[in-house]
Length: 135
Image (cartoon, rainbow, N blue to C red):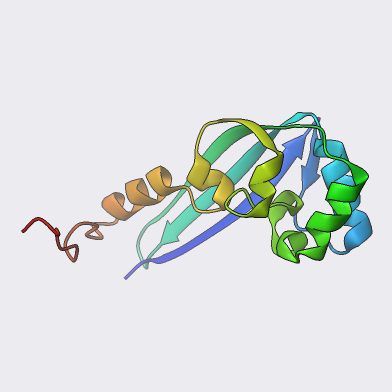
């Protein structure tokens, strides 16, 4: 059976943003993203004893302007502490998103189209165990 791994990073004006180490790093990240467009890159890799493959999803996300109070309030939710770029689009962080062009699942952190492509390449069945509620 193959092993699968994925990770996400943000890029804004050539600067890379991983997970914030503390509030100051988070505030710097979110302030840099506030009112601006950035790219979210999520890579998914799969490997077994004889093959390996890597695919990358790139999504453009634009934030609205974010106030200092919102930055503090969002940090206090605990949500940004382990998220690339300091936000979770699937959670409270969605309130900052003005526009997204590309893969929502890639921004969440596991790009589904790319993951399914790798699963197919490694002959891992995707639909086999699903049961239709209509049957």
